Image (cartoon, rainbow, N blue to C red; front, top):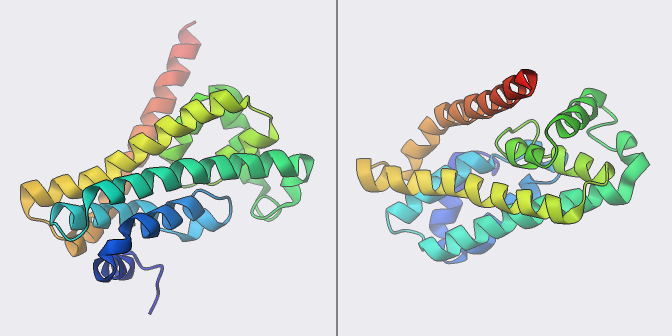
Amino acid sequence: MNFFDPANIAVFITANAGYVALILFLLLFFEALMGIGYFLPAATVLLSAGALVGSGVAAPVPAFAGAIAGAILGGEANYRLGRHLSDRLPDTWPFSRYPVLLTRSRAFILRHGGKSILLGRFSKPLRPTVPAVAGMLAMPLPRFRAFNAAAGVLWTLMWLGGGALMTLTSGFDAEQAVKISGGLLLVSLIVAVGAISMDRWRRNQL
């Protein structure tokens, strides 16, 4: 069985609903780390977990608390990792194998400042890299924490809350939530690109 399959994770959460807070915390914590995050389908799983919350299988408060805590603390751990590695970060995977990730993340942060942490959270390619690069660039910790907390809360509410809302309003179950998550992932990417484009347009008007 492929445990990284979102459908299998949804089944695992269903069978262990009493541990939903721990499961979602660990999933989102590690999904926020550079390198590891690319292999974990956190957004899809959150949508499925939301469907389980909406259907009464999983308790809402532990689910939301665990997911939000994992997203925020995972982002900070990634930031601290980048700050600790500093000049050695370019020689660390995935940047050592794909240096363009470092180049793009650095340019993204220099262009958008603290907002890059918020915008990067909604982009799968940038989510595991931007916090680490922000640490390498020594972004002030209070600024990082403010944007990281806002990003973790908003992103989690969008996916986990979205899954719960779909179940409550349309009778979707966890399996159906997995099937439509691909479309919602595309929507979130379009929103992120639109926000970045709008910010760039405003800058050009100044």
